Image (cartoon, rainbow, N blue to C red; front, side, top):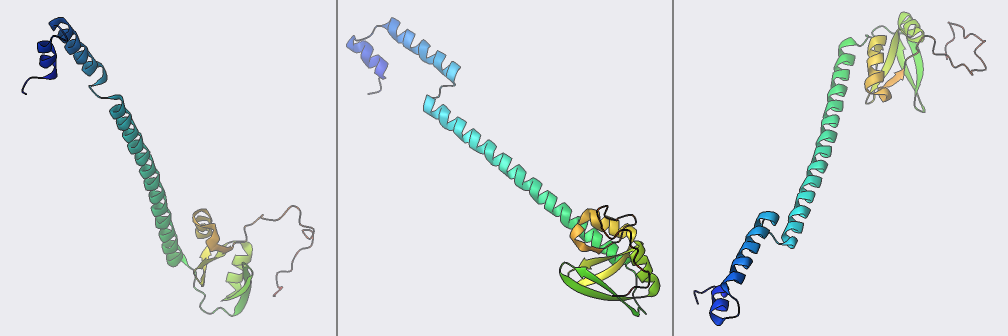
Length: 177
């Protein structure tokens, strides 16, 4: 029982020693060349490596998305800190400044100087949730770059529409609506 199949074949006279040596050497060469693996095992290993590479690519893409989202949130937080720190106080505002936010008509009470500054583009109105704040033009520019949806009113100088049929008619400064 302890005899290998090769020994048993040799004792039975079915093979000679030369054939056994050739078979051993052929087997050794196959091990060196193919790593001693059967073709099915090689295919499974290749499929597993391909699946692992695909998983790495998906994980890297997911990590990139998460990092971009984290950066975007950090930029929004920084923007709101800037708005909070640089907002213009509306205390003593007695003039109603009307503006549209989407399809809704909104109103803020501002001073006369603030109204002129908003109309001239020196100040802008930004939205945070349901609150509106008046900020300087530099902060409005930052808001436009970071999150354009937060910028509600910013009358940039020279921002006229070239196809405006009423461009030649100037709007009076004292017009209130």
